[in-house]
Image (cartoon, rainbow, N blue to C red):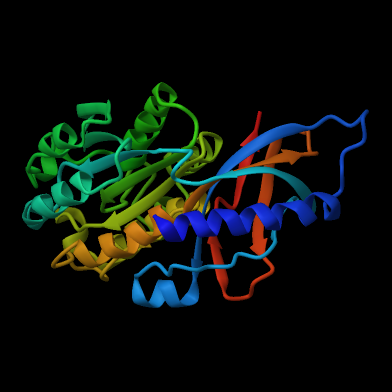
Length: 313
């Protein structure tokens, strides 16, 4: 906690010179606010999976469509509690069931005030045993074993992700995340790499997550469909990497095999979540459509994960 507070103080000093360097909107110019999730790390933290106590982010710069924008606020965990959904594919290999205790331990250790939801992706439906709640023990106990049966495989896991994203409307705006345990395989448009990694369902979920400021952290887990095909395994992993990269999250994988344990991933994820902030800035671009976003620090040792853009209606 102390490290996060020090980081926030350094941000406060960083924002002041930024307001003067960014192009200030004229009184007649229309502007709108945009809020995105960002995660900030040092290269050392990424290698060691352990948060440092003192981190200088220096000056942050936000560019939208290559134009520098004015930062309004950066809220830390203390002022923007996390809302997080655990989304699990029903037909994962039953090896996943060996990891449930670790998932429950992870949920119970989340900061007080965190809101947790659990959901299972099945053919034709998404089951939600636990809606968003700040009762972490109740959320942990809502996890159950998966069937591992390919008959329950969803046509596209991203249809379920899309549905779960809609449920974030029930929680306050702020720091939001999805932990997606899936093979990443969308079979609705064919079984080749191009259709899997660029499917309509995947693109729709990316856009929706960007609009709702939800970072998606994906965990590749094999199923019967991917166990027998390296092409499908690579395609599913590529799709998961895309949805995570485009929304400001991160993809975790151990190649085409099931991870022996999620604990190493969780250690890295804890650093990511502890360093997640809600950044709000003024956008000077009023036109509809896709807008590219870039967030940088003047400190070359700092890495910032953030959505690569968003769609404005």
